[in-house]
Each structure stands twice: as C-alpha cells, then as structure tokens.
Image 1 (tube, rainbow, N blue to C red):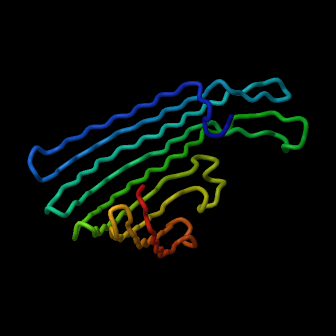
Image 2 (image 1 turned 180 degrees about the vertical axis):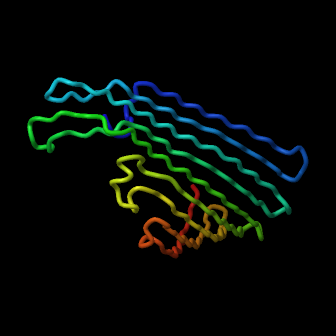
Image 3 (image 1 turned 180 degrees about the horizontal axis):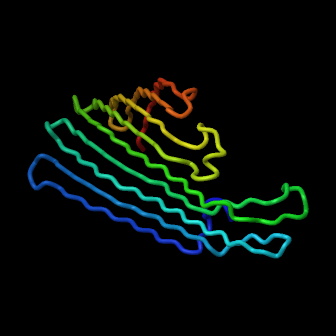
Length: 219
C-alpha cells in the first residue's frame, strides 16, 4: 500500500481533555484538549520481475489541540472564544519503475522519501443574546489558515506550484435569530458569509453569501 494507511500494522490513539469551571457566578468555563493518532505500516512490499523486493514504510500522524473559554458578562449574554490547531503529517517512500505500467516487465527502485505536512490554525469568537424569553440572537466569526507542503524532495520539484503546496485562509461570519412562536414551535433564520483566499491558486479566491430560514416543531 502506497497511499494512506487504511489498515495500519501499528496504531496509537490518544485523547485528552481538561476543564475548569469558575466557582463564582461569572459562568466562566475553560476547556482544553489534545488528540493524537499515529499509524504505521511497514509490512507491505513491491517485488519486481527481477525478484528484488522493496518494503514500503508509511507513517501517518495527526495531532490536534485546542482551548475554549466561555463566560457570561451579562445575565442574558454568553460569549465564547476558541482556538484550535491541527497537523496532518504523512511520510512514505517514493518508488519508481523502469517501464510503463502496461508493460509486463517492471523493476522497482526507491527514489526518495516523501513528506506531506499541513498545519491548520482556527480562531473563532461567538456570542448569544437572549433579548426576550422567546427571542435569541447569535453571532459568530471564525478565521482559519491552512499552510504546508503536499510533497517534498523529488516529487515536490516535479509538481507545479498549485499542487505542491497549500496556503489558504477562510473567514466566516454567521448571524442568526431564533424566535419561539409557541412552546413547541420556533422559527429560525441565519445569514452566513464565507470568504476564501488561496495564496497558491488565486483562481479559487472568492466569497459567498448564504441565507437560511426554517420552522422547527418539537414533539
């Protein structure tokens, strides 16, 4: 297997979380987490028509961490601030063959070791305000940046810039309202604006407006 490790030979999965709630009436709540998935596979091999075998050695590590803080600055107002980070790190051998794939005779050779590594940072700020018992307003803004290389060494040199790297940002603004018509019936409306900027492939840069409305019924 030369792609992502779907059935790893070895795997480690770690999940941790920690929370703190203030003893006063501020409603302060802080929660942090760290997760890690480590997958390895070294029991697959390629054998050429010359009888020589090359073992594939893949390693895929995904790390993520973040912290969220929420507080009630006023009786009817709740605010929150969140920061999250993730890193996708994949490492494998880069093989080549001396013949084209449709030819019967092929001998393999190891050309390089490739690495894919992307870091993503996300920051979001949100608030909910209960204007009346039957009406609640909400707002949220988030900023996300992803940056890294999809290849390294020989493979990166052979790829065009738009395929060899990732460097983009995403801004999202959300505004919403929830109106309770009756005890079990409510009407919801939400406006969403997304602006995406790609520094590698500028043709993908642009924004989109979305408006959603719906009626909810509770049984």
